Image (cartoon, rainbow, N blue to C red):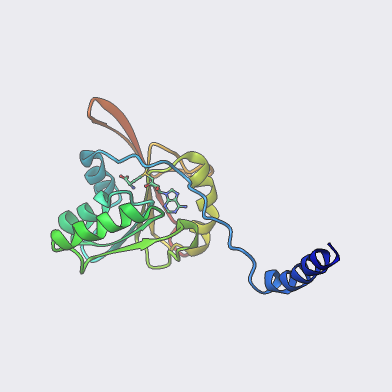
Amino acid sequence: MRYLVRSLVTLAILAVPALAIDPPRPKPAKLAPYVTSPQPVVDRMLQLAGLKSGETVYDLGCGDGRILFSAAKNFSAKAVGVELSGTLVRRTREQSETMGLSNQIKVIQGDMMQVDLKDADVVTLYLITEANDQLRPKFEKELKPGARVVSLEFKMRGWKPSKVEKVEAHRHPYTIYVYELPQKQ
Ligand SMILES: C[S@@+](CC[C@H](N)C(=O)[O-])C[C@H]1O[C@@H](n2cnc3c(N)ncnc32)[C@H](O)[C@@H]1O
């Protein structure tokens, strides 16, 4: 018994510095479930954002990559997707190879809150309002002047949209909100 207590105390003493050196990383929060944007809505989101050839779009929570494919194929843009799900990331990478778009598309497996957005001309979102709330300070800090944020269905609270459009797809009305970061004075 005394041996057991001594071993447990020794283990606890050894564990404390180990924890101090390498604290466990918090698990990234899943900010929205996996639901896809209908294809006609995807194209309209990118049109409303004024996505131009050669610009870079980030889809935060890229799901099956449909926004990336549309941006690369129909708008000749570069597209970066960020997605938590390893299965969806693998599927999107394979699909971009098959479509011959892998030189324009990059898919990052990870947490959207950790990805630097300084290169983004356009950011697309199909999340929920609370997730948009979490992203807003990050956008204000990292996005360049004139960058556009397009959010499907959910507003960016505290920002005034430059465009709001309702689009019908699969007999369901969708609302697209477009926001523009102010140009530097
Ligand atoms: C509603 S789906 C949108 C999919 C795609 N953007 C579209 O419009 O078709 C939201 C996606 O965000 C992903 N997601 C949720 N939280 C995330 C996080 N913290 N980092 C990266 N992706 C996340 C989910 O796994 C899901 O695929």
